[in-house]
View 1: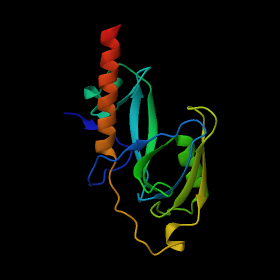
View 2 (view 1 turned 180 degrees about the horizontal axis):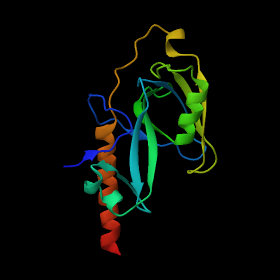
View 3 (view 1 turned 90 degrees about the vertical axis):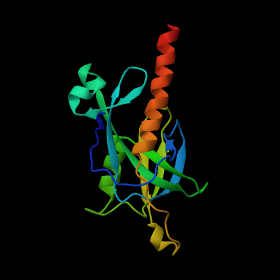
Length: 168
């Protein structure tokens, strides 16, 4: 079985946390539970994303020369709902965070306000607020790696895509 192609080394941890993609004009206030951004490479089929795996000769997307894209995932605690999820961020949002952070500063405990502009494919606007530990002594929940949740999402997309092909 091919390995999921990642842009950073995987961390061990339990799985099955929801993946959140912000929709048009949606905004969230979160505290980050990850120490780092977990970046993953995927291929776009024209209708769904599929994982890019290593080695490349075992990757369906690479063998078909499908375009790749990078998405980052931060394990977050939503400050309004109290729910944990993996927040999907684009390259542009990643760059905004990097510009606002001090050099080599870890992400854990960072409070973010993230808003998608008008349109599901529009850019994300990121604002970094005072860190969690400046506001409370309450401990943060433990970090969880997003790989298993993403694989579940890709399986769901794969089944949906298979149904579309069968119906055509």
